[in-house]
Length: 137
Length: 308
Image (cartoon, rainbow over all chains, first blue to last red; front, side, top):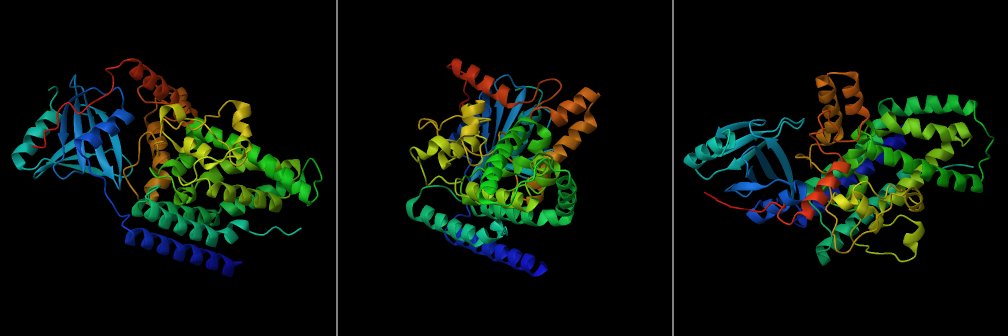
């Protein structure tokens, strides 16, 4: 019984390593690029009633943020592997901090993930932070 | 009658078929693979096989042994009994699967299987670590009480799981008359899609007739390509986050509840339920989609894209 379990687990482990190795070798280790078009498409799908006032597109193509037309909400679109994920917050409901030339969104989720929105330079990061954190546009 | 461990026997074939699909993806450009996503799915599959060893298998065995003592009927271990068991188990699967989408307590386990934004054979193996204990025991035990031997049931569960493996692919488009009776890749793509028109549909395991009988069947629309994942996609490939994210969400919400009604709503309400209605359930997502698309100017657009 124990022998079978070890054998089964061993076959599965070898299989996982082979599959992961093959996907890597065939170029499947990819990250999505968060362009203006890709971010808008994802946001339109995930939050179709979110009316965008302004987009902040990350300089490194890994995240983008949108401030709603009425200034009351923020949406964040970020890369997860080759896919994109979206989060929508009321302004002030997400932790924000400046990290050199970027803004970090501190997601209150079990993953404790912080999403980095690259602004390009420190001055731009400061401007973006005040826009994202401010009460209204 | 001896019942082999069909899932263990199938594992080498799973591996081979996944490799074939990856090579076909590379050769044809059809389908979609990502290394970290595939790795996460496979680790979840391995965990699903190991998880019962942490007490779940022993508990299930004890419960089933006791319940079998009080079985309603003497069902012999014959081929017709296996066939009947397979069909009844698929009926059982339909209802467990349906409630797993409609009630958050059950969704907390099942969400794991939907947490990939990809739809390929590795997605089939992205399985819960908590489902058997938190929900499976409740839904499977009645079959033991009817009189099916636990070994026969485990065999039927295995066959059902193996059937569902091959339908997780974008390589097979439509299957003609076969789709009338059986669950197929096309039907199951709809089930994994987050497009509002596809939400909460096609719960079948093997026989799609259950969905047709109970009003949950939605055919794949060639004009609307499925977009896979969950309505709030995870931001992580960490298997622990994948396995327990929704459970942590429930605990957090229950801790913030101000009444027993709120506790019940957070645990037994539909996924996305909240006391003030500020979160999105499937029904509200569908309503919102309909409203936004009734209003031509409703969709968001990249008003400005200042890459400063």
